[in-house]
Amino acid sequence: MSIAQPHLDLEIEAEIARLQNAIRHWAESRDLWFDCGFRDYSSYVDGEPYIPPVATILIAEGGLANVLNGYFDEGYEEQFTQLLMSLGYWWENHNGTTFYIYPEDSEKAHLLNDYFHWQWVCGLVKEDTGDVYEELYGHFATKPEKLHELTWREFEVLLFRIFQNRGFKVELGPGRGDNGVDLRLWQSDPIGDVLTLVQAKRYANRNKIDQTQVAALYGVKTVEGADRALFVTTSSYAPVARRFAERTEGKLDLAESADIVGWCRRAESGVITDKSTLVAPENVRRIIYEVAGGTDSRVLHAAYGHNMTINIFALVIKETQHAALIMRLPNLKIDDDGYGQIGREVPLFDGSTIKCLNGEMVWRAKKRVRSDGTISYWDGQNLFSRWNGRPSTFNYMD
Image (cartoon, rainbow, N blue to C red; front, side, top):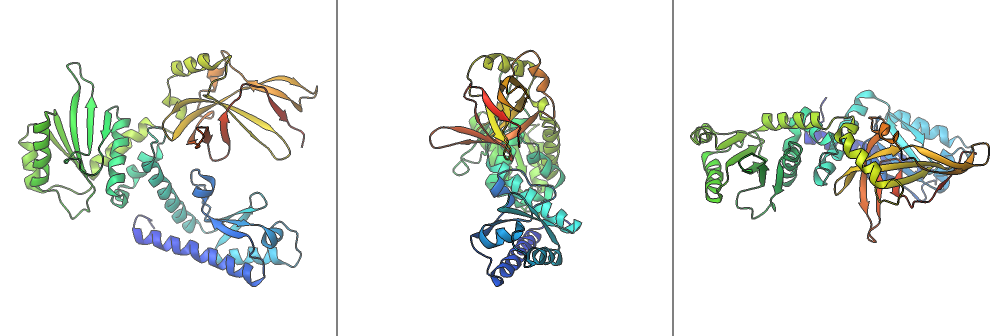
């Protein structure tokens, strides 16, 4: 079963609401529903959808939290588990106050995964993620029908990202009052930049583009003195529109859903899962050289651990307005307690650091700029901030 149809999205939203209402009713009937609520995974974690998908996150304190942490012996924890099993779900204690609810059934898991992934992709379209994300292209390459669920502006932004990925210098129009030009593309040429004007129409399949629309774009191209024009639609073209384009001797191109899918596939292959290949080694070597021995905003630090302190150092090797690729750095111990359990460490910068440029050590993070100008990076598990240049304490004793 596919989740492409909008009515299936509504069915899944209703299913999630049914699950949440059942949990709340069970807890309220036992006087346990105090300081409790639900969150969806993407908004709570601000990260990519989880596999297996988290249907909902239960946030609980007070009585219900005590039950789920095993502090009550009235059989409530077993009852809660049985309730979820009867609905087709199971639960996991994440940190004592946050409880992840997962689907038991594989088909339900598949539908939920598609649903949450679609919400995630829509978020990527809205943000300036540039070529840091491959999901943006991969999703539409495999699910072209989803193009029809984008708003007209999201469709323009998607094309903007695709053409950026293909190496064009791209200007995205204002969306309204653009005089029929949604994007302007510049491509370098030995005899001067080639300018292409793009008109984008996110239409249903039955709504074909006629000659009037393509002729209008060609007229704007002529008036502005552009080299080429490109009309892009999610629908198709009337025969008269195609005949008009043929008479322009290659100055007006027509593209539809199949072409967009092809562009997405090529873009996806250029933004592959091994994100270390997105940045040339010589550029990373240059960054390592620039930041070594000083305090640089591109050197990041995060710490994690329960009753422990484990440090992670990382280096920003590529970033856009809202996202970044970061590379983990080796830790260099500068002193300890003689047993290697407590001490201080710093990031290692030497000739071996470039070896961290590999698929396992390079990943993406969301970039956030606070009102005071402070920048942080969140990768779904750790919050990175600018390293202060001072040795960081580690503690492995639990």
